[in-house]
Image 1: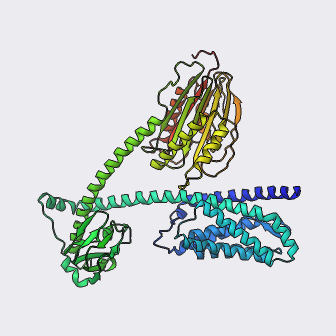
Image 2: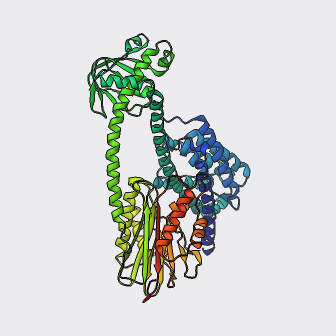
Length: 617
């Protein structure tokens, strides 16, 4: 029994190492520009995956599955590994072809790798890739959620073990092998697919943001390219209350007549804009802007001339509708035959776009006003009066938070639990903007509530994690370092949830990183244990806390400021106070960045301990 338990622990630790390596490889791949161009999340209305993407997924994840086999743990005639994780991921990213292709590479290699379990393991690999691809369609191209990822991996590995029992001979030896490798393989693959799901959701949000920024840039480029020739004429028309009517009649001989019934959707917002419509009879409702248009109106020209060719509103037949339509390809063929028609259509597009832009600017100003209010509210949640305890001579504390946007996900906090014990904390929510700010507010409040219960830092993190995790549908998480200082003895108890290790500046001038175990982030997984560790501060010592916005600030060459440079900066500063320390670091980081826009929140907290009955200089 003890031997089996020992084997299990060794096997699961080894497999988790391979999982970690695979996740690092996945992360690097998604950071590369040639891979990042492939959409991680397919649009639910478009299930076609580009052949180049399928081929890339087959080759990369097939080779990763081969690596998992050769680096696996050999037990008798079987190999414990995380091969299925690679092929399942290929299927869930690219569909059945990608999953089966990667599965065939991994499966064929496994078969010829040998062993009495070669055949069932090879079959299980191909089936895992196929199952991942099938789930791609079931989930409409979106990657599986973390919870379902864990369940999916468990089911596939149980299926894998059943195949080994059914197809491997001798049976008794198969049973013996399964007893040893089943649970480690199930747990390792489940952990791997769950963490990969977290990673994919994060990259998906990054791509959505990049696509939005690219769309706005393209629209602005289009306006700049047309405004010189066309906009002055439109301005004159608008000032004179004139509106030129596009000579659509010239296009009618090339258009197709179509009929639609009342209530029928002509197109939906964000659909591919492949047609322009001219209304002959009937009324059409533009749903998002609550507008009715009728006979003689042209619809769909903005989507046609937009670089992204997407519908900007949904159109539903208010009555029976009779229209002429022409697709984009045919319009482009006619461009040189009747160019003045296209100039008229472009004028109409810009006129409507101008109106929409004015509405958008108004909405943008409203949002900016709301963000300023949100920034004010967020700032008011953080301690802002320094020194916070002017009557105290035994401690001095100072902190700053500079968000990358109007609102951010970083926070700091401190409070006297009683006259002897001081609580302080720093945190960093994954992400930026309003969602991160809300999650930050919740996390900070929960931490403060637990502090007031008089429990240890480790218990504080355990309780907050168990509150945040169950309802965390958006898969957000936060890193936190918190401590409680006994101001009479200098004893500091602290716990860490995945945050950067603080630095201690000793009175004699030495600077060193605290020996802090990383710990798991808050809200990422339930029932995580956080340990409380203790050190003793000497009078004059300063403990410096920061978020990764400091160490990951970049210069024009995209080189990071780094932890090493941070430590060197502090060593070159005569640390007389926490205020001077933070101001010097902030100045150094700004000089290093050289005008490069801040990409992450920058938060710092410095606590100086003077000791009981010590007079501050």
